[in-house]
Length: 83
Image (cartoon, rainbow, N blue to C red; front, side, top):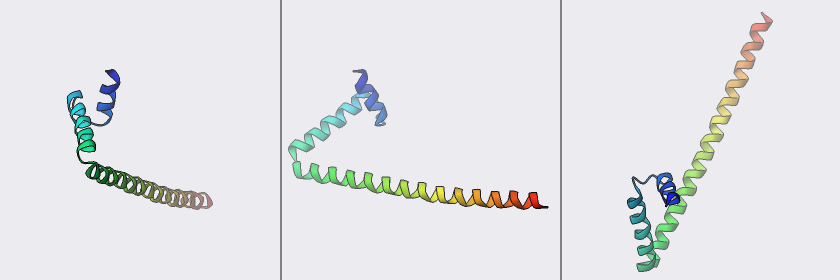
């Protein structure tokens, strides 16, 4: 029971009953309309992959900007020491 509560909190459900209803809904869709379930599952996977790729690109761009700032700060510090 505690494990279910942890999972429901991790997946941002308000309470355990909402989590259970979601699981039952997914299982019902899977068995009642297998093709629709597969399409939904593929859509969720694609969305997850796109978000993950976008997040990695954002992190790479941020890292690049930080490196530029670091370089500029070092140049500025070097210029002050020469004066």
